[in-house]
Amino acid sequence: MTAAPPFPHTKPSSLRLLAEQAFSRAAGAPLTDGNAVELQIDMRATFDAWLEAIRAARGTVLFENYIFRDDEVGRAFLQALVERAQAGVTVCVLRDWMGCLGQSRAGFWKPLLAAGGQVRVYNPPRFASPFGWLSRDHRKLLIVDGEVGFLGGVCVSAKWLGDAQRGVEPWRDTAVAVRGPALADLARAFAESWAQLGDPLPDEALARCTNALPAGTVDLRVVATVPNTAGLYRLDQLIAGMARTNLWLTDAYFVGVAPYVQALVAAARDGVDVRLLVPGTSDVPAVGALSRAGYRPLLEAGIRVFEWKGSMLHAKTAVADGRWARVGSTNLNVASWIGNCEIDVAIEDEAFAQRMEAQYLEDLGNATEIVLKMPRRSRRSDDAPRAHGSGSGPGSGGSGRAAAASALRLANSVGAAITNRRVLGRAESGPLLFAAILLFAAAALAIVWPRALAWPLAVLAIWIGVTLVAQYLAARRKKP
Image (cartoon, helix red, strand yellow):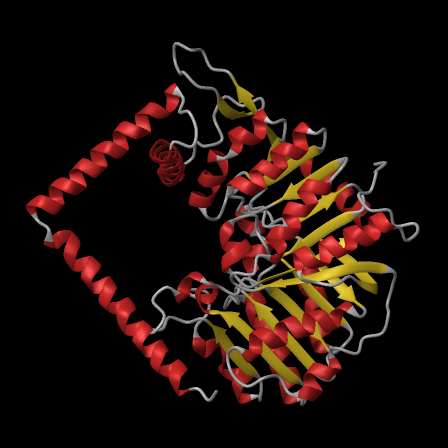
C-alpha cells in the first residue's frame, strides 16, 4: 500500500521532530534505534523460539506473564527454567495471581524454587487492599541475557495451540522477538515490576540485559505502563488523530471508551480507512457482548468491523499509514489502558508495518464483515448490526452475552437521561422504564427492610476504613 506517513522518515525535518516529541511525551517512552524485530504468528513456532532461547541462556532469564498453566506447555517451560537455574543462571519469574488462578498452583513452582530460581506473585488478595485485585500484571514478557526479548499477547498455556483431536484450531495471537538496544528498556520495565514485590534485581543480572549492541535498523518505543499512567492510551489517541491513510486495529477484548471511539470516528469521517478486527467467539463472552454493543457508532461513521471466524483471536495490534505499528499485551479497553501493568512496542519502520498490513489482509480472509442491516419497521424500530451475508445477528449465542449487552445499553441510556447530555431516541425508551422499575424496587426494599441495604454498606465501609487506618500507620512508620 502506498502510504503518506504522518512523519517523514527519509530525512530529519521539523515536522518529524515535532511528531517524535509528541509521541515520546504521550507514551512516556523515547525512540530507540538499531533494533531488529521479528513477527511471530504461529503459536507452536513461538513457543519453540521461547524455549530455545531459555535453554541457551548463559546468565539471566527474566520471565513475566499473566498466565502460567499447569499443562504440557507450562511444564515444558518449567523444566527449561529449572535446568537453567541448576546451571547457575539467574532465573526470575513474575506471575499474576488472578491470571494463574485455576491455571497453576503455588506447588507448581517448587522445582524451580528448589533449583535456586525466584518466583514472585503480583497483587494477591490482601485484607489491607479491598480493591487491589482490580489491578493486574497483564504483561507477557521474556528476556534472555542481553540477546533477545519476546513480548505480545501470548500466555504460557496449551490453549494457544488448540486441540487437533477435538477440531479446535490454534488461537490467533501475535508476538515479536526483539534484538538490540531496546532490550535495555524491556529489562528495566521488568526490574521495576520486580522491585515492587521485594528486593530489586541484582545489578549484575540487570546489567547483562542492558548492554545489547545494535542488531538492525528498526526504530521502536517500549511502552511499559503501570496502573493510572495511561501512556499507551495517550499514544493510541495520538495515532488515531495523526493517521492519514489507514488505521487497522486487531483487539481481543475491545470495549471502546467514548474519547477513543470519537477519535476513530473522526478519523474515518476524515477519509482514513479505519478497520477493527475482533473475535467472533470470545473466551470471555461478556466482553464479546460489550464489544458488539459498541458496533453501531463505528459502523455509522464508516469504520469497517470484522469478526474472526477461528477459535479465538487474542492479538492486540495496530498498523497505520504503512509506517507505524504496535504489538503488545494492551487491549483497547479501560482495564488495559489504565488499570493494568502492560507492555507494548510501538514500531516506526516501513518494512515491518507493511508486513503487518499483509498479515492483516490475510486475517480478514478468515473473518466476517459486520454491516448495518435495516430490518422492517413493523418488526423493529431501530437498525442493528448484522454479520454480512448472515441471517443471525452477531449478538446471538448465549444469555450471558445478551445480558452484558443489555446492561451496557441500560447504563448508556440512563446516564444520558440523568445528565441530559444528549437527546434520546425512541428505541431507548424501554431501558428507561426498566431502570425506573429497578429503582422503585430498591426504594421499596429500603423502606420495608432497610437492613438489607444498610448492613452490606456498613461492612464495606468498616473494611475500607480499617485498611485506610492501616495504610496511614504504615506510612507514618516510614523514615522521612
